[in-house]
Length: 349
Image 1 (cartoon, one colour):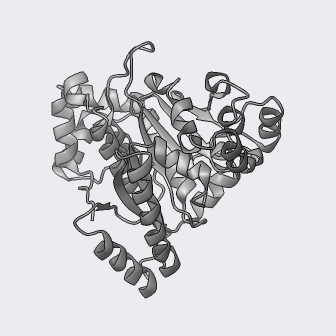
Image 2 (cartoon, helix red, strand yellow; image 1 turned 180 degrees about the vertical axis):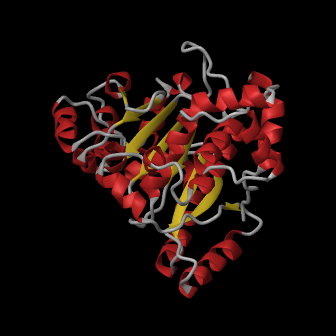
């Protein structure tokens, strides 16, 4: 299972020294990030373990560890495509997608979030309300209109309230896409999204696709377009059973349309460590994937996720101390490593 060391004084000192800052300079740098008035003495106490590092500082330092220098706006980018997929609904797939996209964006990357679910949950999570979704749909500016060839993708992509995080929005109209793609593209239907993303891929460092809770043609399009696959999976028996079907689908995609698709990892979600069934399911997940892919630390069940969704906000943007943050940070680190986005603080400060 993926692990990460907790932020402590030694890790803080290593970050400070990598940036070439004295304790006084580090305190000033930190105050600019978190809006506090810490001094050199406080930094010294944290580094030697005399005082506990405040949570707001921990969060800022964890982000700083993976920040990179933002490239120029016109710099070519790789556009690594990561799909979050699971045919079962209610497994925190959208929460995984939007929080991952958020972390990647605030650490120096330009990110495109593709909402490939007709429910439009990812679209709502990044601040697009129902009325605006209706307007976008009426203006033919959603993923559906891109897939069926009505609107160029560059005219549909929109900014969000998070700098460097852009959105390809969805609406309920996307539920018609599977049938129309089959009719319009009888032989090339699974390739449409990959072809459409090619027009904007070089303008993004990472593209995150939030898939629908099914294995229909739109999801097949996402898997065909993706370089890496992330599987959020609730730590309960029915979700785990569904992974066998997902594996079969991934194998078919690899053999037919996308031999380069790789499994990045499984993210256990909605975990309650006090329940023996959840622990047993987590053990089963770990055993199932042992030696083949990463099983990340489980994301605990927490009301903050539902509260943030109801407010049309990204959970970690609303509360960076939310349970599961470390898992999403680990996932973001791994994606940046795969994408070659490791211009870290020690090199770029």
